[in-house]
Length: 205
Image (cartoon, rainbow, N blue to C red; front, side, top):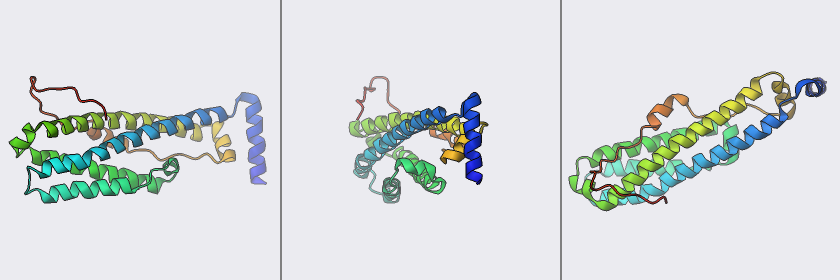
């Protein structure tokens, strides 16, 4: 009976001022596109890690704990199957975000360690990897911000009248989102200290 009444109310609202159904479709598609870009950039970063670790290993033989931490963090991050459905599961989404945050922290510590090894910092291969990592971190920040905005727009529609009636009828619910408070830190990528004469363009992977 309750579902019937909700359906009736939603039908009446549609006839009067629109029910927001089309808005749900457009915002949901935007979320999917934004989420795909987030995953692409996180995968790009994960792909850089093995080469980065191997390069550092050749110079920083006494930093095994740091290297193991990065490798383990990457394993945790890539072990999570980030399907489109993950955004509808707050617990799974939180686990995904925590794993990516752990990898970010491990990489930051690795870059601090590298400061103690001038020969490694001068290595062209390492500098290329570091520059690619910086670019990837920038793209991650942009992709996350786009996703946050897309989810905010969608969630506002879910909660607003009269579209909230449509949400109840069709089963739309709020989606999980990244922690906005972390965005400032995420947007500050690792610094690449290249001299003016040594800078080079790094081709996208």
